[in-house]
Length: 376
Image 1 (cartoon, helix red, strand yellow):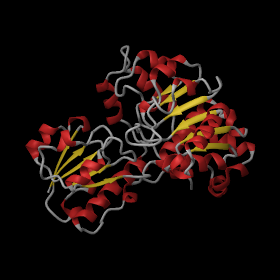
Image 2: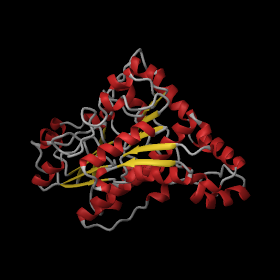
Image 3: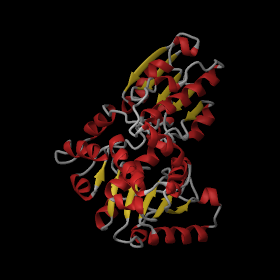
């Protein structure tokens, strides 16, 4: 069996080998952007393992007749034309929910890095999209005692009028707005999320100047022109013209990171596990790898007594006293220094960030751990 895989997928060789798949495997690893129609025509692989930088469509697959399985180790699937795969009879799997805690914790880290005082007051957090990631963020926020103003028409089944009314309320009242939606357009969704339809220039005018805006979803959810034209503080992990980023946009962002919100060891390994499980099912082979075997044990950042009580209180963070909240802030910074990623991205701007440098930062990214790894 011949597999072409994006080499940024975590622990590829541990999951995809003759012992774990029960047959001879030729694993060809390349950069995701280098997976082209010409490469597939030359190699004629049986399976593709990709991430979000590889568009899957008829142009890529037209001259390949062997591919019967495609797995993307990502939550999002806007880079995949699933209807075309269905027509071709190609099995498709994604890693739904693999990095939901990773991204939610990234957002909380960004918020608290810029506004540590928010941990001690009941702010209003607007969440656009309440799927795996947005829903997880909402649960964290509620545990912190924050009020959540969330919208997701596919969960609430709102009418268009109610959806717009709720969106208006979210935009006007939120202290922080975080985006967790797939990238969709008018021809493939009744509620398109591309900035031409969702975050229009008119909708930007409804947001209060003090509001913090965080986008870790897809770059084209927010137009660069609107970001630059408005005074709100912005945190971006994704960019409209990614992987190129203009120096002007970088200077406008309070924090900017190279599309790594979900880049934790746990999130990456869950993603690999999910597409491995799906391939095993496709091949009718038993699952023989568990990602938890690749997770090293971390030293608790809390004292033994505190960590035990904190683990219980983590289920209800409102129960934390002032000292415990201060310790939580300190340890969130120890677990993930978001300013370091911000500095690394700005350091490769000469003056703009090139696609090559952006991709290299992602390739060389030292995977951080989720908060749970540091609880005793």
